[in-house]
Length: 278
Image (cartoon, rainbow, N blue to C red; front, side, top):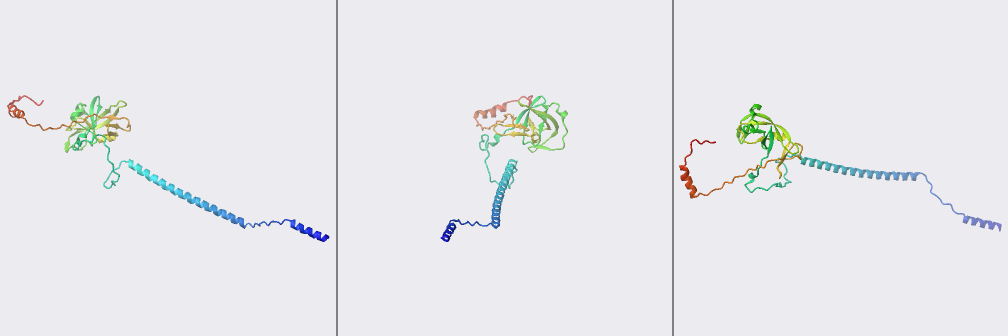
């Protein structure tokens, strides 16, 4: 009886004793493999990030290059350009009209000169800002009315030749004058050397391209015609309204009265021989 009980108890104990769970043993190889996988994934991530950053840098470089090219083109377009026969005529735009266009065949009547009152010494004089004149000059008759002792102030001129409308100009010398451009805010004074010409028919002092460029005198031909001197573009000098009237020749019809006057009366008229041109 005792043995059976003991045996039964052993069986009960064996049944009630829980079985131990078998845990996997670590040899270190799996850990090494995991680290290698992690390092490989990190490398892949770094490589992908590097390739993405390289691609982004390439795109940025291309954009910067495009911006640089655009800026260069934009800067060059703002510089004065000299057109040639090789220039591509793609972008063509009609010029804006700043005043009413004359009728066909009457375009020559729209011309204007840039004449301005200046002070020479203590006297007023008219000066023409002539962009078409190569040199600054003045006629003898215009000069002597402003500077009576002009002959005493002449400087000998070198052997240059001047011509106007295929006519050779007779040079007398050079005179150094000071011109004052009056303005309410601030007057501007310039020193100019005029070439004195004997047979110049102009009634004005002519300021040519030489001194227009020396003093930076810019003439605006827009609606409000004016000019500026130097860097101060806000100080505007006006010009005189000296547009010449164009005389229109009308053909008059002959009448018997006019024929009688010309044929009979004027032929019989006698003029006093003492009359002179004056």
